[in-house]
Image (cartoon, rainbow, N blue to C red; front, side):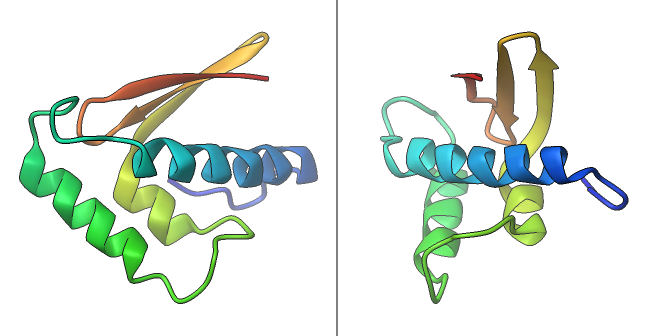
Length: 89
């Protein structure tokens, strides 16, 4: 996923999304997603980050997210594990 040439509004939305995505991933339990090894790998990756995520991190997004569908009033994030979340705009 690349935001090369993206507008400032797109990058701002991506920054907001990365915070929401991180919060969602931190709340996931093994019972909610059957891919325990994948979840553990992703949680370890997030835990190894040296600082809080305060700006868009393309490496992190590429590691976690399969696709983002944008709709009027909300967007849906599909993680590589198969989990999806809806985020109101």
